[in-house]
Amino acid sequence: MKQLVILFHGYGSDGDDLKGLGEFWAGALPGLNYASPNAPQHCEAGIGYQWFSLAENNEANRRQSLADARPDIDTLLATVLNDHSIDPVNDQIMLVGFSQGTMIALDILLRSHYNIVGVIGFSGRLIEKPTATTQTSAEVLLIHGESDEIVPAQETLQAQAELNQLGIPCNYMIEPGVVHTISAAGVEAATQFLAERFGWEDEEESDE
Image (tube, rainbow, N blue to C red):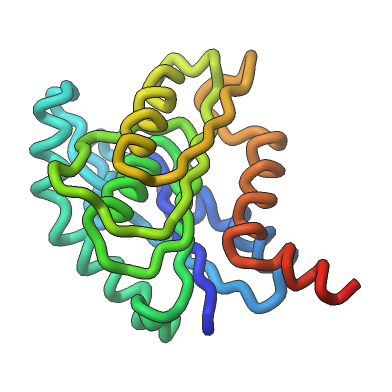
């Protein structure tokens, strides 16, 4: 069984932005694969890439822009899985996002049938809660800076409540004084969560 981490960068950035995080985890957990692709759309602001448009950025428009972007995102995901020879049903997949990338990771979790074991979301929000019950064994960790002025930390609290209502275990970490970024403490918490969900801690204990 293979294990793959897919990283989803933020608005106006590119796959290289989170590549170092993937390299760190691949080095810490031998045999782990990772992918950090560029989003399908060139950013309308002219620099980097976007997962969906933020023109007229309000709740209703975000939902429609996300819906419009889903076919291209699905095509990209299929390419990533194929490139890494991942069986989406039997291999284990972890989704990790920052900001707009977190919004994408949560959306994929709630509407796909992939074998997603976990989602780690930094500084994001849940754009649209499904109307039907989601069948998944995944767990979610949401990490957010309390001083984030781009995506308020309240969005993580709201997402956590809505995911729990759907029966998806979701824990959160609000970091005092942290802005719209990924902190060292956030990476540490994410690394522990990733190891637990992939079963690495159980393997380490059995080796002792």
